[in-house]
Image (cartoon, rainbow, N blue to C red):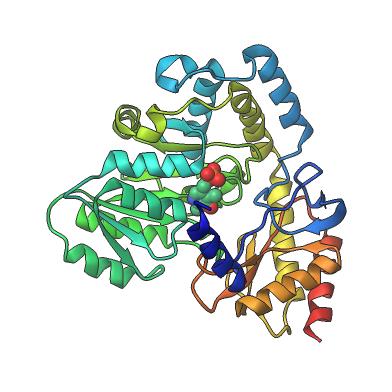
Amino acid sequence: MPFTVLQHKLDERAAQGLQRRRRVLESPQGVHITVDGKDYLSFCSNDYLGLANHPRLIEALQHGAQQYGVGAGASHLVSGHSGAHHELEQALAAFVGKPHALLFSTGYLANLGAVQALVGRGDTVFADKLNHASLNDAMLLSRATVKRYRHNDMAHLAQLLEETHGGRKLIITDAVFSMDGDIAPLPELLALCEQHDAWLLVDDAHGFGVLGKEGRGSLAHFSLELPRIIYMATLGKAAGVSGAFVAAEKVVTETLVQNARSYIYTTASPPALASSLLASLEVMREEEWRREHLRKLIVQLRAGLSGLPWSLMPSFTPIQPLLVGSNEDAVVLSEGLRVRGIWVPAIRPPTVPQGTARLRISLSAAHSADDVSQLAEGLHELAQ
Ligand SMILES: *Cc1c(COP(=O)(O)O)cnc(C)c1O
């Protein structure tokens, strides 16, 4: 067998309880889903506003397909850049308060492309230790020198900046940390950037649509409007569809058009997705109740889960991780909920640091107060 070595590795992984498994979803994404033939109340998805199955988005997608067909057929730089893509880029730039925006097929590709286009050998990337995997991969791929600072530790970052001379300096951070739900101190990061003439790339995958007025994201949340910030957000989470964008000064987006390999050498996403995203932006701005309802659910959950042997990590975003500790305990707890018809994923190393396995509870505007009560009851039962 030519692959014995691979089988050994897989067996090792399974023995450690770290095997990842896919489940088959048989319903649209939502808070009530059918998985492998069974119905669940779900706290798993990043569909924070409940838009992934929204009728207006579905209708816009259908119209988009009628107008543009299903496939883009080429990359943006050849013949794949449709009117829908172009209109969406303009709408996104205006929404987040930047002069220009550039669409990417996924957030993973946006991060790879942006970091690789902006820095290279002889430059330095400063990165929070808890950044998303796509930012970590991006900085390695860029071949710049990498300096990682302790999570949200501005003193550590300042020290690393002081020790660095010459070359471009790029600080990269999640705005809302994906496995912790806490927020990067963007004003302090920006002050350090000014002081050291560094650029700041903010990955707002979990803030876009959720934070700030009308869901304009983390920069709006902190009222930050500065050319030095390069803003990236994904469109498959709160926006409910798929894709990502980088918004920045024209000189930055133009540099990406010319140099970002994950932009240049890939087929543009289907134009109909852009049509659907234009509708998503409208719903996002118009329906403030979705964010208000989310905030209420967050307060309810935090109150409802007090007194458990496990504690919620400090977070006021829809990402509410319940810190369990050992991998086995996290899996047992997740299974216990699953048996009760409630689906919450156990997140284990290497996604999170050793000894900090957790249940990653994510809330959606589509949840009801009753749904949150059910989860709290389930956890209190399992605690006994
Ligand atoms: C999900 C995520 C990404 C990747 O976005 P995709 O569109 O899913 O590829 C990037 N950064 C962060 C922080 C994320 O959570």
